[in-house]
Length: 190
Ligand SMILES: [Fe+2]
Ligand SMILES: [Fe+2]
Image 1: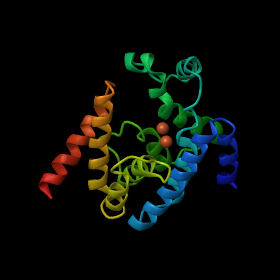
Image 2: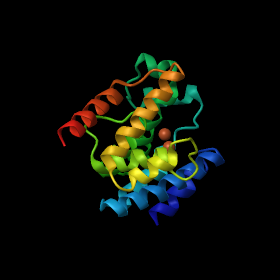
Image 3: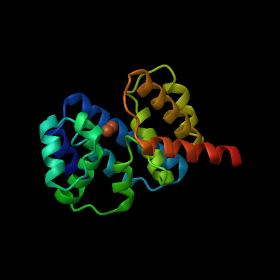
Image 4: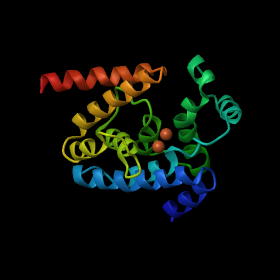
């Protein structure tokens, strides 16, 4: 079965702690998708693949991205880990012949977000940030909100991530701000 094969494949490519996170994302994405009536299977597949390139050595990430024609911008050059979502999309396509847009966009947008995200992509983004092994002060509150209101939870998790990145002096992707602007304008008009 595809899910079992994927789980075995990814387990060999990532650190044990990452693998636990991956299974947590799979299970929490399943729960959120069921609550909110979105298809479960694409998100389970996306979960197993989304961090498959996360533990690749930096140099290998850059080489692989170049070989596959993934654009490498200055921030990605400085921090190749920013390429891991796009690398995972390519792995899904090339190694597993996956072309389901629901799987690929969930993977592609799981770190930075994107203004064109679907509700299913947002559920996946929430599952990545709120799965059971995540532990920070507001995580329980965010889980409760995520189980009731996908857009509101995404807006709050995004604000959290932006604050966290700022505090660490990290760069923030323009797509993240564009998603934030979209969610804020939707919240104002509802
Ligand atoms: Fe990731
Ligand atoms: Fe992840």
